[in-house]
Image 1: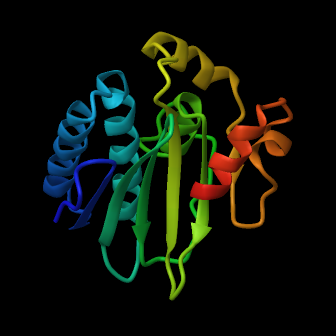
Image 2: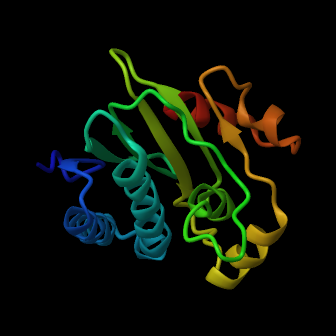
Length: 179
């Protein structure tokens, strides 16, 4: 189900491998419709990573909701599932086949976080700038190797205080809306 294609899109699904590819195509089409083509690769990669986490780890079921919200100059991509356990960033060894997704999302997103969902479950989200400052894939890869991820939870301070770098006052307000 897709709702209101103007500035908000919601897709409900079971996080099965075949569905993940379909949602990636829906996200790409929606961002093309909003004329946010430079964000497509990053949003599709991020939603794939988050849905893969639901597929691998969520219990008691794989039902989830993907939501895209474009507010001002920020795109927020979130995945809500029914498992209350929060994901963790971990160090993946060279031979590991998993464990890199959240670190990768931290590398290309402005910020990301986790918040509990009323009635159980959680929402994992990340934001991308829609203001024309789009990182290149190589820059994201370099950044990925060097940056510690900024993880925001329900009890975290606003992003400016978490990251230690000053941000414009309006960035806090946006983060408060999505976090």
